[in-house]
Image 1 (spheres, helix red, strand yellow):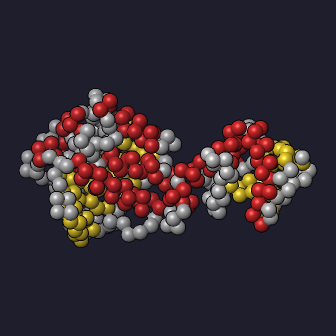
Image 2 (tube, rainbow, N blue to C red; image 1 turned 180 degrees about the horizontal axis):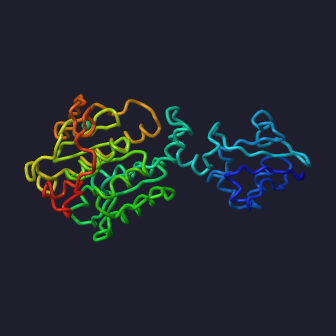
Length: 364
Ligand SMILES: [Zn+2]
């Protein structure tokens, strides 16, 4: 039975009282690991799978040599040998073993890898509205490991929300949506930092809130908020993943600074009452899942820096006929916000302009 020194990597030191080196004994690597787990029970789940086999993501070294080039776990050890433990992900040293396990199916894709996963973990996404679109977007982004998710919503959960707003359940009726949303997100991924903005987005607070995030997902379903989010995201230089739904139809696009904005399509809000809201026209709940999930996908692409974002294109979804069409969006040089001679340079509260009472805002 040899006594050896085991070098503990940073992410595992929480289980060894922050000791960088600990003593363990055994006649081979396998026995040393078992003795280590016996001394420091917190290490057990880091070193072993549930079935008792050594985790695939742990690389082991004896005196600096990888045991895979020797006799593996049966490699014999002698007194004074140094055993090194290294997470298997090359270049993924900043991911903890727990993160490597949680995001494994991401990390093994070359487009994401540990680098892309770290970008997700370090990213901050703001979701406007914990409603129909915000629900699937928030859940998928949380599951994907987006480190900070901000949610702007001041509503409470109502029973008519539940056919589409999957962040909330029956037991949440009457609760503030931001609270219910935070609970749902933490059920999926307790490591996400949820920032609750339990207030309406206004000309007063919009810039300060949006400024704190990397990407904005628009899940609002009223024109005052839609225009405010568009304008402020443009001024703050934040990509805006915009989505909207009605009945069986959906639209989704990405407005990136320098590539136009919502006002290039619709320079000013429609007069009050000229366009029906979801409350008036209805919406099939699944539409939120389709469009909100595409919004989450686009946000992930922007954060990781992969693929072709939905910039300058609008995807139109007709679910009744199962048709996906694409429209090319034109940048308007006369746009009042992003055009050559902007006429709108300050946030506008269209609440009064549109005559939409705030209580019915954020239906999405
Ligand atoms: Zn514009």
